Every structure is written in C-alpha cells, then in structure tokens.
Length: 170
Image 1 (cartoon, rainbow, N blue to C red):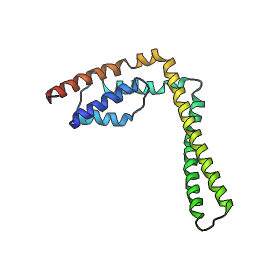
Image 2 (cartoon, rainbow, N blue to C red):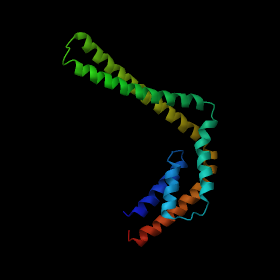
Image 3 (cartoon, one colour):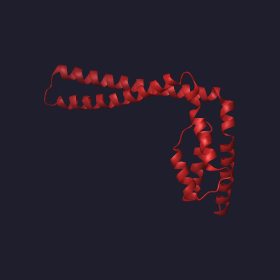
Image 4 (cartoon, rainbow, N blue to C red):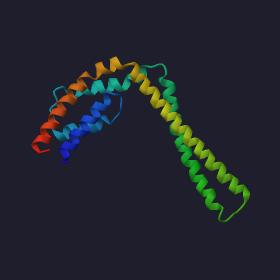
C-alpha cells in the first residue's frame, strides 16, 4: 500500500480514536496533515481544540486525582521491578562464585518481589484505564458533542481515502 494511503489510514484511525478517548500524539497528526498537504473542511485548530477538550474530560471527575496517583504508582512499580530483576540476575550470577543457601534465598526473594511488583503495576494500570473508560462512558453525550467536528473531518478523510484507493485500482 502506498505511503499516502497508509498515512491517510493512520490519520483516520487516530482522529477517530480521539472520539472514543484513545490518545495518539497530536504532533504526529499535525505532521501527517502537513505532509499530505490536506485542506480539511474544518480548520485543524478547531479540531485540535476538540481533541484537547476530549482528552481533558477525565480531569473533571472527582476520582481523577486518585486515578492519576495510581498511574504514577504503576510507573514507579515498573521501575522498581526492573531494579529487582537486575539485582536478581546479579545475585543469580553471584551463585556461581558463592554457592550459599543465603544467596539462594536472596535470589528467590528478589524474584518473588519482582513478580509482585510487576503484577501490582499491571493491576494499577488496568484499574486506572478502566476508571478512565468509565468516566468517558459516563460523559458519552459530551464526548459525542465534542467529537462532532472530528467526525466530519474523519468522514472527509474517508472520502479522500476511497478516492485515493479507487485511483490506484484497489
């Protein structure tokens, strides 16, 4: 598939994803629009305002600070997990020189701690994601209203994509 078609497809998927609260780099979208030389029916600035408003929807929820804290903890636990895995590997390698039961216990304790840390991180991340999805679901009317211009832009891009594919014989 030619680069222009792929870029249009990527742009459509990303813009449509914003309508359901899925984040993509806005700078990347701007770059794609500029590279493709598109003249959108609605100005990019207006579309970008709507995207920012959609992304800000969860921040209006009273639960958002707790969700954000959980997300930060998930990141910390992921970094802690990496440190624990490196220490575990180091302790495991040290067993070749110092074969003591205490070192075996340390390896096991580090490995179990790493498993606990990674599972907690994934659980926190999953819970935060579910809570954000629930916030979007509770504000579906506002989400649809904010997504109206984005939807028109996506429909326009779909027509362009169809024309492009038809011109290429697909």
